[in-house]
Length: 428
Image (cartoon, rainbow, N blue to C red):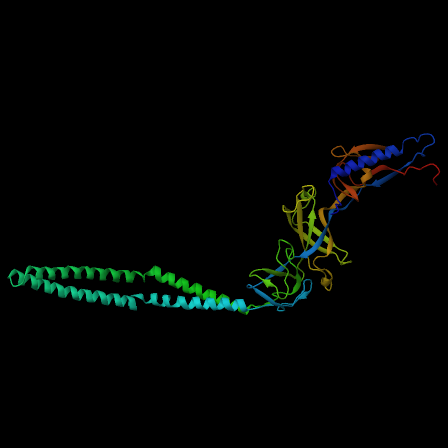
Protein backbone atom coordinates (compact mmCIF):
# COMPACT_ATOMS: atom_id res chain seq x y z
CA UNK A 1 0.00 0.00 0.00
CA UNK A 2 1.45 3.43 -0.96
CA UNK A 3 0.64 6.39 1.25
CA UNK A 4 0.45 9.66 -0.69
CA UNK A 5 -0.56 11.80 2.30
CA UNK A 6 0.54 12.07 5.90
CA UNK A 7 -0.39 14.37 8.72
CA UNK A 8 0.80 17.99 8.95
CA UNK A 9 3.47 17.35 11.58
CA UNK A 10 5.56 14.93 9.49
CA UNK A 11 5.48 17.34 6.54
CA UNK A 12 6.60 20.23 8.69
CA UNK A 13 9.42 18.17 10.18
CA UNK A 14 10.47 17.43 6.60
CA UNK A 15 10.36 21.14 5.79
CA UNK A 16 12.53 21.87 8.79
CA UNK A 17 15.01 19.30 7.56
CA UNK A 18 15.06 20.97 4.14
CA UNK A 19 15.70 24.33 5.79
CA UNK A 20 18.63 22.88 7.69
CA UNK A 21 19.94 21.36 4.48
CA UNK A 22 19.66 24.75 2.80
CA UNK A 23 21.64 26.42 5.58
CA UNK A 24 24.29 23.71 5.28
CA UNK A 25 24.48 24.26 1.55
CA UNK A 26 25.04 28.03 2.05
CA UNK A 27 27.95 27.58 4.48
CA UNK A 28 31.42 28.71 3.32
CA UNK A 29 33.27 25.90 1.61
CA UNK A 30 36.56 24.81 3.23
CA UNK A 31 39.73 25.37 1.34
CA UNK A 32 40.24 22.96 -1.53
CA UNK A 33 36.73 21.50 -0.96
CA UNK A 34 33.45 21.89 -2.74
CA UNK A 35 32.44 25.31 -4.06
CA UNK A 36 29.71 27.13 -2.08
CA UNK A 37 26.24 26.72 -3.50
CA UNK A 38 24.11 29.79 -3.99
CA UNK A 39 20.45 29.84 -2.91
CA UNK A 40 17.97 31.27 -5.36
CA UNK A 41 15.12 33.36 -4.05
CA UNK A 42 11.62 32.28 -4.97
CA UNK A 43 8.43 34.25 -4.49
CA UNK A 44 4.72 33.63 -4.82
CA UNK A 45 1.76 35.98 -4.74
CA UNK A 46 -0.82 34.41 -2.44
CA UNK A 47 -4.15 33.61 -4.04
CA UNK A 48 -7.07 31.37 -3.15
CA UNK A 49 -7.51 28.30 -5.33
CA UNK A 50 -9.18 24.87 -5.12
CA UNK A 51 -7.46 22.42 -2.79
CA UNK A 52 -7.90 18.65 -2.75
CA UNK A 53 -6.19 16.26 -0.31
CA UNK A 54 -6.12 12.59 -1.25
CA UNK A 55 -4.86 9.25 0.01
CA UNK A 56 -4.02 6.60 -2.57
CA UNK A 57 -4.19 2.89 -1.72
CA UNK A 58 -3.54 -0.30 -3.65
CA UNK A 59 -6.61 -2.51 -3.91
CA UNK A 60 -8.64 -4.80 -6.12
CA UNK A 61 -11.92 -4.69 -7.97
CA UNK A 62 -14.49 -6.77 -6.08
CA UNK A 63 -18.12 -7.67 -6.65
CA UNK A 64 -20.46 -5.06 -5.26
CA UNK A 65 -24.12 -5.96 -5.66
CA UNK A 66 -23.74 -9.74 -5.87
CA UNK A 67 -26.26 -12.58 -5.67
CA UNK A 68 -25.18 -15.89 -4.15
CA UNK A 69 -25.98 -19.21 -5.84
CA UNK A 70 -26.33 -22.13 -3.41
CA UNK A 71 -26.88 -25.88 -3.73
CA UNK A 72 -30.56 -26.80 -3.18
CA UNK A 73 -29.83 -30.23 -1.64
CA UNK A 74 -27.10 -32.79 -0.98
CA UNK A 75 -26.03 -34.60 -4.10
CA UNK A 76 -23.50 -35.20 -6.83
CA UNK A 77 -22.83 -32.70 -9.61
CA UNK A 78 -23.90 -34.28 -12.89
CA UNK A 79 -22.90 -31.44 -15.24
CA UNK A 80 -21.17 -28.09 -14.75
CA UNK A 81 -21.99 -25.40 -17.32
CA UNK A 82 -20.15 -22.27 -16.15
CA UNK A 83 -16.64 -20.98 -15.52
CA UNK A 84 -15.67 -18.37 -12.97
CA UNK A 85 -14.99 -15.00 -14.56
CA UNK A 86 -17.38 -15.56 -17.47
CA UNK A 87 -20.66 -13.73 -17.90
CA UNK A 88 -24.01 -15.48 -17.52
CA UNK A 89 -27.52 -14.42 -18.39
CA UNK A 90 -30.53 -14.77 -16.13
CA UNK A 91 -31.99 -18.24 -16.66
CA UNK A 92 -28.78 -19.85 -17.93
CA UNK A 93 -28.11 -23.36 -16.61
CA UNK A 94 -25.18 -23.31 -14.18
CA UNK A 95 -25.12 -26.96 -13.07
CA UNK A 96 -27.32 -30.06 -12.87
CA UNK A 97 -27.44 -32.23 -9.74
CA UNK A 98 -28.16 -35.94 -9.55
CA UNK A 99 -31.65 -36.58 -8.11
CA UNK A 100 -31.07 -40.08 -6.70
CA UNK A 101 -30.69 -39.00 -3.10
CA UNK A 102 -33.43 -36.40 -3.47
CA UNK A 103 -35.82 -39.09 -4.75
CA UNK A 104 -35.07 -41.26 -1.71
CA UNK A 105 -35.75 -38.32 0.60
CA UNK A 106 -39.01 -37.67 -1.23
CA UNK A 107 -40.15 -41.29 -0.75
CA UNK A 108 -39.35 -41.15 2.96
CA UNK A 109 -41.34 -37.94 3.28
CA UNK A 110 -44.34 -39.47 1.50
CA UNK A 111 -44.27 -42.52 3.79
CA UNK A 112 -44.24 -40.26 6.83
CA UNK A 113 -47.23 -38.37 5.42
CA UNK A 114 -49.23 -41.54 4.92
CA UNK A 115 -48.48 -42.66 8.48
CA UNK A 116 -49.60 -39.34 9.95
CA UNK A 117 -52.82 -39.04 7.93
CA UNK A 118 -54.70 -41.91 9.68
CA UNK A 119 -54.18 -40.69 13.29
CA UNK A 120 -55.19 -37.18 12.29
CA UNK A 121 -58.30 -38.45 10.54
CA UNK A 122 -59.27 -40.71 13.46
CA UNK A 123 -58.81 -37.98 16.05
CA UNK A 124 -60.83 -35.52 14.00
CA UNK A 125 -63.97 -37.69 14.68
CA UNK A 126 -62.78 -39.38 17.84
CA UNK A 127 -66.02 -39.12 19.82
CA UNK A 128 -67.88 -41.10 17.16
CA UNK A 129 -64.98 -43.34 16.27
CA UNK A 130 -64.73 -47.12 16.67
CA UNK A 131 -62.66 -47.11 19.88
CA UNK A 132 -65.09 -44.86 21.73
CA UNK A 133 -68.04 -46.89 20.39
CA UNK A 134 -66.47 -50.12 21.67
CA UNK A 135 -65.89 -48.58 25.10
CA UNK A 136 -69.50 -47.44 25.22
CA UNK A 137 -70.71 -50.96 24.33
CA UNK A 138 -68.64 -52.52 27.09
CA UNK A 139 -70.05 -50.02 29.58
CA UNK A 140 -73.61 -50.73 28.42
CA UNK A 141 -73.13 -54.47 28.82
CA UNK A 142 -71.64 -53.95 32.28
CA UNK A 143 -74.62 -51.85 33.29
CA UNK A 144 -77.08 -54.50 32.01
CA UNK A 145 -75.24 -57.21 33.92
CA UNK A 146 -75.26 -55.04 37.01
CA UNK A 147 -79.02 -54.59 36.77
CA UNK A 148 -79.48 -58.37 36.40
CA UNK A 149 -77.27 -59.15 39.42
CA UNK A 150 -79.10 -56.55 41.47
CA UNK A 151 -82.43 -58.28 40.71
CA UNK A 152 -80.99 -61.70 41.52
CA UNK A 153 -79.46 -60.45 44.76
CA UNK A 154 -82.79 -58.91 45.78
CA UNK A 155 -84.63 -62.13 45.04
CA UNK A 156 -81.98 -64.10 46.95
CA UNK A 157 -82.41 -61.85 49.97
CA UNK A 158 -86.21 -62.39 49.94
CA UNK A 159 -85.87 -66.18 49.69
CA UNK A 160 -83.17 -66.28 52.37
CA UNK A 161 -85.33 -64.28 54.75
CA UNK A 162 -88.12 -66.88 54.28
CA UNK A 163 -85.67 -69.69 54.87
CA UNK A 164 -86.13 -71.11 51.40
CA UNK A 165 -82.40 -70.99 50.43
CA UNK A 166 -79.22 -71.57 52.31
CA UNK A 167 -76.92 -68.80 53.55
CA UNK A 168 -74.11 -69.87 51.21
CA UNK A 169 -76.34 -69.49 48.15
CA UNK A 170 -77.40 -66.02 49.28
CA UNK A 171 -73.76 -65.05 49.96
CA UNK A 172 -72.79 -66.15 46.43
CA UNK A 173 -75.43 -63.86 44.92
CA UNK A 174 -74.10 -60.95 46.99
CA UNK A 175 -70.52 -61.62 45.84
CA UNK A 176 -71.57 -61.63 42.17
CA UNK A 177 -73.30 -58.27 42.68
CA UNK A 178 -70.17 -56.74 44.24
CA UNK A 179 -67.98 -58.04 41.40
CA UNK A 180 -70.33 -56.64 38.75
CA UNK A 181 -70.38 -53.25 40.42
CA UNK A 182 -66.59 -53.17 40.23
CA UNK A 183 -66.72 -54.22 36.55
CA UNK A 184 -69.18 -51.43 35.79
CA UNK A 185 -66.96 -48.86 37.52
CA UNK A 186 -64.02 -50.10 35.46
CA UNK A 187 -66.06 -49.73 32.26
CA UNK A 188 -66.86 -46.13 33.20
CA UNK A 189 -63.17 -45.39 33.71
CA UNK A 190 -62.24 -47.05 30.41
CA UNK A 191 -64.74 -44.90 28.53
CA UNK A 192 -63.43 -41.74 30.18
CA UNK A 193 -59.82 -42.63 29.32
CA UNK A 194 -60.76 -43.44 25.74
CA UNK A 195 -62.52 -40.11 25.33
CA UNK A 196 -59.49 -38.31 26.84
CA UNK A 197 -57.23 -39.75 24.14
CA UNK A 198 -59.14 -37.64 21.64
CA UNK A 199 -59.13 -34.33 23.51
CA UNK A 200 -58.16 -30.96 21.96
CA UNK A 201 -54.45 -31.39 22.76
CA UNK A 202 -54.24 -34.77 21.01
CA UNK A 203 -56.14 -33.47 17.99
CA UNK A 204 -53.83 -30.44 17.73
CA UNK A 205 -50.70 -32.59 17.99
CA UNK A 206 -51.94 -34.91 15.23
CA UNK A 207 -52.73 -31.93 12.99
CA UNK A 208 -49.26 -30.48 13.54
CA UNK A 209 -47.59 -33.79 12.69
CA UNK A 210 -49.68 -34.00 9.53
CA UNK A 211 -48.76 -30.43 8.57
CA UNK A 212 -45.05 -31.10 9.10
CA UNK A 213 -45.23 -34.27 7.00
CA UNK A 214 -46.95 -32.37 4.18
CA UNK A 215 -44.32 -29.61 4.28
CA UNK A 216 -41.49 -32.15 4.15
CA UNK A 217 -43.02 -33.86 1.16
CA UNK A 218 -43.56 -30.55 -0.59
CA UNK A 219 -39.97 -29.47 0.09
CA UNK A 220 -38.64 -32.80 -1.15
CA UNK A 221 -40.61 -32.45 -4.37
CA UNK A 222 -39.40 -28.86 -4.80
CA UNK A 223 -35.82 -30.02 -4.31
CA UNK A 224 -36.20 -32.58 -7.07
CA UNK A 225 -37.53 -29.88 -9.38
CA UNK A 226 -34.57 -27.62 -8.46
CA UNK A 227 -31.95 -30.13 -9.58
CA UNK A 228 -31.24 -27.79 -12.51
CA UNK A 229 -29.60 -24.73 -10.93
CA UNK A 230 -30.10 -21.61 -13.05
CA UNK A 231 -28.66 -18.10 -12.85
CA UNK A 232 -31.11 -15.82 -11.01
CA UNK A 233 -29.68 -12.62 -12.53
CA UNK A 234 -27.33 -11.55 -15.30
CA UNK A 235 -23.72 -10.73 -14.47
CA UNK A 236 -20.25 -12.19 -14.02
CA UNK A 237 -19.65 -15.43 -12.11
CA UNK A 238 -17.26 -14.76 -9.23
CA UNK A 239 -15.48 -17.38 -7.17
CA UNK A 240 -16.30 -17.06 -3.44
CA UNK A 241 -13.41 -15.80 -1.33
CA UNK A 242 -13.29 -19.00 0.77
CA UNK A 243 -13.54 -21.49 -2.10
CA UNK A 244 -10.45 -23.58 -2.60
CA UNK A 245 -8.83 -22.60 0.72
CA UNK A 246 -8.09 -24.99 3.54
CA UNK A 247 -10.88 -23.50 5.64
CA UNK A 248 -13.35 -22.89 2.84
CA UNK A 249 -15.61 -24.94 0.65
CA UNK A 250 -14.15 -27.40 -1.83
CA UNK A 251 -14.05 -26.45 -5.51
CA UNK A 252 -17.09 -27.35 -7.61
CA UNK A 253 -16.53 -29.86 -10.41
CA UNK A 254 -18.53 -32.41 -12.38
CA UNK A 255 -18.73 -35.64 -10.42
CA UNK A 256 -18.04 -33.95 -7.09
CA UNK A 257 -20.50 -33.52 -4.28
CA UNK A 258 -22.23 -30.48 -2.85
CA UNK A 259 -24.17 -30.05 0.37
CA UNK A 260 -27.43 -28.26 0.95
CA UNK A 261 -26.84 -24.51 1.22
CA UNK A 262 -23.24 -24.70 -0.02
CA UNK A 263 -22.22 -21.50 -1.81
CA UNK A 264 -21.53 -22.40 -5.43
CA UNK A 265 -20.58 -18.91 -6.60
CA UNK A 266 -21.51 -15.24 -6.72
CA UNK A 267 -23.05 -13.40 -9.63
CA UNK A 268 -21.86 -9.79 -9.70
CA UNK A 269 -24.68 -7.75 -11.21
CA UNK A 270 -23.90 -5.52 -14.15
CA UNK A 271 -22.70 -2.19 -12.80
CA UNK A 272 -22.49 -3.55 -9.27
CA UNK A 273 -18.74 -3.32 -8.63
CA UNK A 274 -16.75 -2.26 -5.59
CA UNK A 275 -13.12 -1.76 -4.66
CA UNK A 276 -11.53 -3.39 -1.62
CA UNK A 277 -8.27 -2.04 -0.18
CA UNK A 278 -6.14 -2.32 2.96
CA UNK A 279 -5.51 0.66 5.24
CA UNK A 280 -2.58 1.25 7.55
CA UNK A 281 -3.55 2.08 11.13
CA UNK A 282 -1.99 5.56 10.83
CA UNK A 283 -4.41 6.38 8.00
CA UNK A 284 -7.62 4.85 9.31
CA UNK A 285 -8.71 7.99 11.20
CA UNK A 286 -8.36 10.08 8.06
CA UNK A 287 -11.01 8.00 6.29
CA UNK A 288 -14.75 7.99 6.89
CA UNK A 289 -17.79 6.43 5.27
CA UNK A 290 -19.16 8.56 2.45
CA UNK A 291 -15.87 10.05 1.22
CA UNK A 292 -15.56 10.24 -2.56
CA UNK A 293 -13.10 7.95 -4.35
CA UNK A 294 -11.70 7.60 -7.84
CA UNK A 295 -10.38 4.26 -9.07
CA UNK A 296 -7.97 3.55 -11.90
CA UNK A 297 -6.05 0.45 -12.87
CA UNK A 298 -3.55 -0.96 -15.35
CA UNK A 299 -6.11 -3.51 -16.53
CA UNK A 300 -8.57 -0.85 -17.68
CA UNK A 301 -6.44 2.11 -18.88
CA UNK A 302 -8.27 5.30 -19.70
CA UNK A 303 -11.23 4.47 -17.45
CA UNK A 304 -11.75 6.39 -14.22
CA UNK A 305 -14.38 4.94 -11.92
CA UNK A 306 -16.01 7.05 -9.23
CA UNK A 307 -17.68 5.99 -6.01
CA UNK A 308 -17.78 6.43 -2.24
CA UNK A 309 -16.34 4.68 0.81
CA UNK A 310 -18.98 2.22 2.04
CA UNK A 311 -17.32 0.52 5.01
CA UNK A 312 -14.18 0.54 7.16
CA UNK A 313 -13.57 -2.44 9.41
CA UNK A 314 -10.79 -4.07 11.40
CA UNK A 315 -9.82 -7.57 10.30
CA UNK A 316 -8.81 -9.09 13.64
CA UNK A 317 -8.19 -12.47 12.09
CA UNK A 318 -5.20 -11.36 10.03
CA UNK A 319 -2.57 -9.40 11.94
CA UNK A 320 0.67 -8.44 10.28
CA UNK A 321 4.12 -9.67 11.21
CA UNK A 322 4.58 -6.66 13.52
CA UNK A 323 1.33 -7.42 15.34
CA UNK A 324 -0.57 -4.53 13.80
CA UNK A 325 -4.29 -4.78 13.26
CA UNK A 326 -5.27 -4.98 9.61
CA UNK A 327 -7.96 -2.56 8.45
CA UNK A 328 -9.97 -3.19 5.30
CA UNK A 329 -12.16 -0.65 3.50
CA UNK A 330 -14.68 -1.12 0.72
CA UNK A 331 -15.87 1.50 -1.75
CA UNK A 332 -18.98 1.06 -3.85
CA UNK A 333 -18.43 2.15 -7.44
CA UNK A 334 -20.74 3.75 -9.94
CA UNK A 335 -21.51 1.83 -13.12
CA UNK A 336 -18.71 2.01 -15.71
CA UNK A 337 -19.32 4.14 -18.79
CA UNK A 338 -21.45 2.63 -21.53
CA UNK A 339 -19.53 0.10 -23.61
CA UNK A 340 -16.68 -0.17 -21.09
CA UNK A 341 -18.23 -2.46 -18.48
CA UNK A 342 -16.61 -5.56 -19.98
CA UNK A 343 -13.12 -4.06 -19.55
CA UNK A 344 -13.43 -3.80 -15.76
CA UNK A 345 -13.32 -7.29 -14.27
CA UNK A 346 -13.53 -8.55 -10.72
CA UNK A 347 -10.06 -9.30 -9.33
CA UNK A 348 -8.16 -6.63 -11.30
CA UNK A 349 -5.67 -4.54 -9.34
CA UNK A 350 -6.64 -0.93 -8.82
CA UNK A 351 -5.36 2.34 -7.39
CA UNK A 352 -8.00 3.78 -5.06
CA UNK A 353 -7.69 7.53 -4.45
CA UNK A 354 -9.77 8.65 -1.46
CA UNK A 355 -10.54 12.38 -1.25
CA UNK A 356 -10.00 13.16 2.44
CA UNK A 357 -10.37 16.94 2.15
CA UNK A 358 -11.65 19.33 -0.48
CA UNK A 359 -12.11 23.11 -0.46
CA UNK A 360 -13.15 25.35 -3.36
CA UNK A 361 -10.96 28.23 -2.06
CA UNK A 362 -7.84 27.74 0.01
CA UNK A 363 -4.37 29.23 0.37
CA UNK A 364 -1.71 26.68 -0.58
CA UNK A 365 2.06 27.24 -0.45
CA UNK A 366 4.96 25.12 -1.70
CA UNK A 367 6.41 22.96 1.10
CA UNK A 368 9.75 24.87 1.03
CA UNK A 369 7.97 28.16 1.74
CA UNK A 370 6.94 26.99 5.23
CA UNK A 371 9.61 27.02 7.94
CA UNK A 372 9.40 25.19 11.25
CA UNK A 373 6.60 22.95 12.38
CA UNK A 374 3.21 23.33 14.00
CA UNK A 375 2.34 25.16 16.15
CA UNK A 376 5.37 27.40 15.44
CA UNK A 377 5.33 27.34 11.63
CA UNK A 378 6.34 30.60 9.92
CA UNK A 379 6.69 32.08 6.44
CA UNK A 380 8.59 35.08 5.06
CA UNK A 381 6.36 37.83 3.67
CA UNK A 382 7.67 40.72 1.53
CA UNK A 383 6.32 44.05 2.78
CA UNK A 384 7.58 46.85 0.57
CA UNK A 385 11.34 46.62 0.38
CA UNK A 386 11.75 44.45 3.45
CA UNK A 387 10.87 40.95 4.58
CA UNK A 388 9.11 39.96 7.78
CA UNK A 389 8.64 36.57 9.40
CA UNK A 390 4.99 35.74 10.11
CA UNK A 391 3.46 32.91 12.10
CA UNK A 392 0.89 30.82 10.21
CA UNK A 393 -1.45 27.97 11.04
CA UNK A 394 -1.03 25.02 8.71
CA UNK A 395 -3.69 22.47 7.72
CA UNK A 396 -3.45 19.44 5.50
CA UNK A 397 -0.39 18.78 3.40
CA UNK A 398 0.03 17.08 0.05
CA UNK A 399 3.01 16.64 -2.25
CA UNK A 400 1.64 19.61 -4.22
CA UNK A 401 1.50 22.01 -1.30
CA UNK A 402 0.67 22.88 2.31
CA UNK A 403 -2.68 24.40 3.24
CA UNK A 404 -2.48 27.66 5.22
CA UNK A 405 -5.46 28.13 7.50
CA UNK A 406 -4.58 31.55 8.92
CA UNK A 407 -1.80 34.15 8.91
CA UNK A 408 -1.90 35.04 5.20
CA UNK A 409 -4.36 36.72 2.90
CA UNK A 410 -4.64 36.84 -0.91
CA UNK A 411 -2.41 39.43 -2.60
CA UNK A 412 0.52 39.13 -0.20
CA UNK A 413 3.89 37.95 -1.50
CA UNK A 414 5.65 35.02 0.17
CA UNK A 415 9.37 34.55 -0.43
CA UNK A 416 11.70 31.67 0.31
CA UNK A 417 15.13 30.53 -0.73
CA UNK A 418 15.65 27.29 -2.58
CA UNK A 419 19.19 25.91 -2.26
CA UNK A 420 21.10 24.75 -5.30
CA UNK A 421 23.01 21.45 -5.35
CA UNK A 422 26.58 21.61 -4.02
CA UNK A 423 29.10 21.98 -6.86
CA UNK A 424 32.12 19.70 -6.57
CA UNK A 425 35.54 20.95 -7.72
CA UNK A 426 36.22 20.21 -11.35
CA UNK A 427 32.58 19.76 -12.28
CA UNK A 428 31.12 21.82 -15.03
